[in-house]
Structure formats: C-alpha cells, structure tokens
Length: 251
Image 1: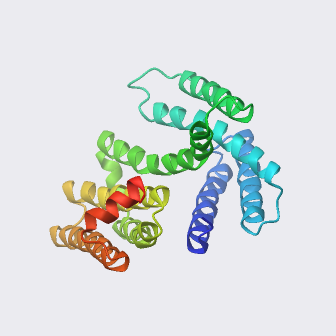
Image 2: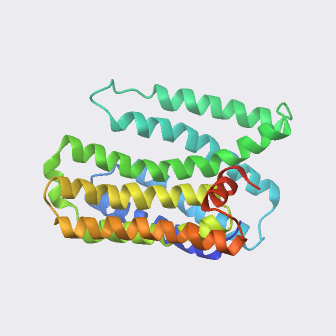
C-alpha cells in the first residue's frame, strides 16, 4: 500500500539486521559465500523495492522479483523453522527442498494461467506473508533458546526488549486503521512475543523486577485497548469487535 512510515521502518529493520550479519562475517561466524549471497539479495531487494515505490520499474521486472522472493521465501521459511529444533529432530534440508519445489510449481501454474483468479491472488500474496512469517519466527527461536539455555536470558537487555515492544506497538494503530492485516500481524506479533514475551521470560527467571514487568504489561494492554477504541470512533463502528472483523475479513 506504499505507506511511507512502513517503508521507513522496514528499511531501517533491514539495514540494522544486515549490520549484524556484517559483524558476524567479520568475526568469521558466517561463511563468506552465504554472506555474499545474502548481500546481493538484500541490495537487490532494497533497490527494486524503492524503484517500485516511486514507479520507476517495469511491471514485468517487478513480477519476476515477486516470483523470486516467493520461491525463495517458501524454501527458506520451513527450513528455518525446522532448523530451530535441531538436534531434537534430524538435521535435514528436505523441508526447504519440498516447500521450494511446491513454490516453483505454484508460481509456474499462476503464470501459465492454470489457476483461478483467487489462486493467482493467493500466490501473489505469498511473498509478503513469507517475509512476515520469517520476521515473526525470530522471537519464537529466541524464546526456544531461552527455554533450552536459561542462562542466556542474563545476556538479554530489558531496555532492548522494551524498545521492541514499543516500536512495533506504535505501528499497530496505523495498520489497524488502514486494515492492513499483514502489517498488523507482524507488528502485533513482534510487540507481544518479541518484546513482551521476552520480558515475561526475564521476569520468570528473575532478571527484571515485578514492578517493571507489570508496568509494561499494563501499558501494552492499555495501548491495544486504546487503539481499537479510537479506531471504533474513527470509523463510527458500534464495537471494537467490528474493527477486528473488518481487519481480518474485510468490510
């Protein structure tokens, strides 16, 4: 929907994450071939997305890029999810291969006109949803690590988790107002799980005080309530549940 605020936030997120990858590569914790491949994809993604934002890119080229990230995203997402739980499950690349193959088939059928209009629309939305789900998986992996190695919690910064909760929480009202389910899902998930969820882990293991945890919990609940209350007033709805219904199912 070319929301300027969302573009800025997502761009800053990409740059900050890439900065971490650069540090890992410099510390030789990330293999050079993988770092180079990631750098190429990140650079291409930023350039093409900004060209599309300003309308400076042909539609066919943008469609090819969407197909590429659809296949890439669907291949990477199941593999990342699977790898999170190794060694409790066998180390395997089959999830990525199977999902990637299905993605290639789906994209090919969509471009050859073998799918219905609803099917083509669904395939077209996969690129955005896989990116959102990859983003959403980060706090899941972090909390799984916390569960396996509680000592790691001492290395977490309560201030950083609070910023994650606040930063993503501030995007929720706009996502709700424009009825952008994908943006709302990513922002709400990150605010609740990446921010508040990690604070909950820190509280359970005694890393933060009860007062701090309950203050942040109350603040988050009040903010979510305020968001849907104001949205209800803005649209003239009779209930916040109407706003939720429109967000998930449309008007």
